[in-house]
Image 1 (cartoon, rainbow over the protein chains, first blue to last red):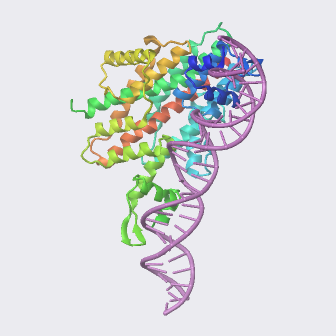
Image 2: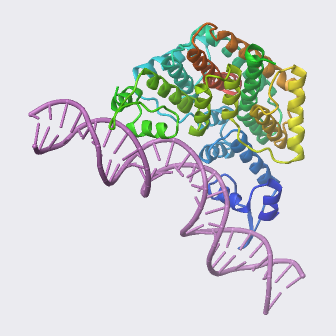
Image 3: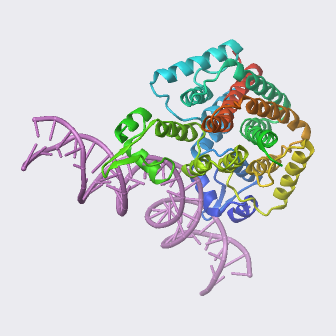
Length: 209
Length: 209
DNA sequence: ATCGTTGGATTGTGCCGCTTTCCCATGGCT
DNA sequence: AGCCATGGGAAAGCGGCACAATCCAACGAT
């Protein structure tokens, strides 16, 4: 398949595909001549993945780069791919050297310790959670463990469900895609449903219809 | 308080504060002379809100503008503020006129109808959900109602919990802040916990420790 | 032979969120 | 009275990002 067909089938412009190749998100086609390269279904599949991560996951190109690199590394285990994805998802803030921040971060670490969760000490999600704690406190809505309980329950139930859905015997590439779908795409599913449920709750409480 | 003190206390530079004033995110101080204005605690509070929406919620300035405008509109009810916030959260994609997209959107509408949720037909979260459906299908992981069930349950439980937390007798400004915290900030709490729970589940399933 | 297509490289573009720069008025200290 | 740090207001600049446009030389189908 030529690049123009790849463009048609993927819905991306030729320039964008070239851009992705330059940035290392997509492999070059196999060179047929100095002005022809051949692309196959795997290139299309890759573009679909890139598109999902970009459009739905709203990931920057640099983050997708990292994920793709981990996907390509056939030596890496699935858990390593997981870590790379988490790291790519961010946040990319450098925690300021602030006492409030350190306190929030300690609360987060303590919570994870109590739950017995096996989570890397460098997981960016720790900082993400600490950041929200700080912001909530600064706004005068300190968060308590009681507030968190339903969220913790829901989060672990869903995570369990997601891991259970990964097919065991499937080829690696499919498992990898499934893993990324679970993390990046199902996160959006959860967010969307949460917003919809909130609107319903708000309508029932404040609405006049 | 002068702008320099406001700058010190908020952690934002004077220029950034001026920028927010220009953009309509923050009210001007009360003019004391042609070169002095006076800022009070409400300005500081507002800056904290802006910061939370920006740093934690990752909202663009234009979205914060819309939310602030709704907050300022003392005639608007809380449910309207809710709708504005939802709209500001996005996504801001124009649904393409694609059969897959229309089908996904119909699935979403049907789901919401079955659940009996009172959700505006223009709620962007409908599109967000439809978008993930399309992406999942294109990747070869079609989503089923069974897959969604645990997410729906979790989402409505949390939404119920969040609405219940809003204090009834509090002054409007506090309720408004609480509402925004529930929607924008608790969404991040949920996301962070979901990621942490996933990492734990992944470690238990794939990890070697 | 011609004309469209491709690869490869360079340059340009539009948006975003500030940041810098200027200018000038003023207030308060000396 | 003189001086200068501070503040207000407006305009222009900047750095990052994700492409998009343009140009060129080399093919390849007709």
